[in-house]
Image (tube, rainbow over all chains, first blue to last red; front, side):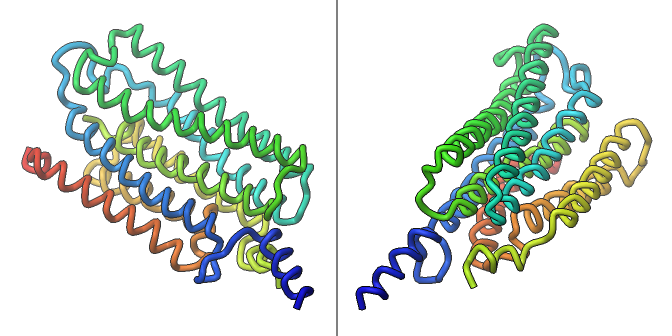
Length: 204
Length: 99
C-alpha cells in the first residue's frame, strides 16, 4: 500500500500533475492560453486591416516597408522554431547539454528578431511614421509591438529555462517544461507567419 | 511506457524536423518572390495558401498537434475559429469587403 502511494508520488513528480483525461494539466493550460491568444491577435490583425489604408498624414505602408529586411527577420524567426523543436527532442532524450545549446541558439535568434524590429521601428520613426501620425501607424505599431513583446517574453522564458536546467531546479518532468516553452515559442512564430503575409506582403 | 518515451515515439526524428524547416524556408522564399515577380490574379490566393500551409505545418509538426491528444487540437482550433469569427465580424462591420 505504502509502496503504491510512494510509486504514485514518484510518478506525479516525474510527469507533473495529470487531469482526469490523462493529459498533463500544464499542457492543457498552455493550449488553452494559446487558444485565447489567438483572439488577442485576431482582434489586433483585424484592426490593422481596417486602418492600414487610413493615412491622413505621414508615409503610406508601401513607402516605408522594407520587404528584403523583413524577409530576413521572418526567416530568422522561422529557423528559431527549428532550433526550439531540436531543444525539445534533446530534452526528451535527457541530453541537458544539447538542450541548453539549442535553447541558447533559439534565444539568440529570437533576440536577433527583436533587434531587427527595434531597428525597423526607429527607421520608420525617422521617416515620419510615429505612433500617433495616422491610424495606420497606430495599428501597425500596436500589432507588431504586441508581437515583439511576446517574442521578448519568449526570450526571457528561454533564458529562465536554461537557468533552471543548469541549476537542476526542475522538480517535475524536465522535457515537458521545455516543451511548454516551445509551444509558446512556436505560437509567436505562427503569429508572425500571418503578420508577414497580411501586413507586409499584401499591399494596402 | 513512460509519457516521455511514448511522446517521443509519436513525434519525428531530428532529420524529419530539419526537412520540415527546409520546406518552410522554401515556401517563405516563394512568398517573398511574390514581391518581385508579378503573379497576376494568382497573387492573393497563392499568398493565402502559402500562409495557411506554413501555419498548419508549424502547428502540426513543430507543436506536435498532429501526434498529440485531440483535446489540445480542440482547445487551440476553437480559439482560432473564434479569432477568425472576430476578424471577419470586425471587417464586415466596417464594410471592409464592400470597399
